[in-house]
Amino acid sequence: MTRTLYVISCAAPPARRLSVPISAAQKAGWDVCLIMSPSAYRWAREDSEGEIDALEDLTGHPVRWQYKLPSQPDVLPAPDAMLVAPLTSNTLNKWAAGISDTLALGLITEAIGMRTPLVALPHWNAAQGRHPAVARSVQTLRDAGVTILLGEGGFTPHEPRQGDLDAYPWQAALDALPA
Image (cartoon, rainbow, N blue to C red):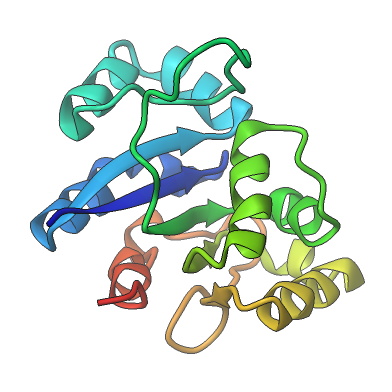
């Protein structure tokens, strides 16, 4: 039996390397579906010609980034788990507040109530991380059962404009998914 993993990607630099976690998750036996925030989708569509097509070829599913109409069928299988990576501070704070104004937020907000396993791997700089809303939002989501990989063993925020894209801990997020 194949397990389905939704990778929910926000617009942060690691979103430019989504083939890395998708391929690794597939090797671990997951059927991967990719959902992007509208900004992440725009980056992939405009910054790299053919990137969306390449991601669809890799996953075997359409890349979703906006809500479908009620009359349209679901094109993705139901998820067994979700990986939110990279998770921006913007999405973190909206998610903790229960805001679902994008497909990505709607899915992860609903997943809490459906008890779908959720792993989140942040990506923001240290200045953003010092905003008081960030700590509150992390705690709110952890209290709701979300595994947020922030700090030791996960993502450690860097100073502004000093991030190392190669150091983003994709494997830690994949290792945190349910067996």
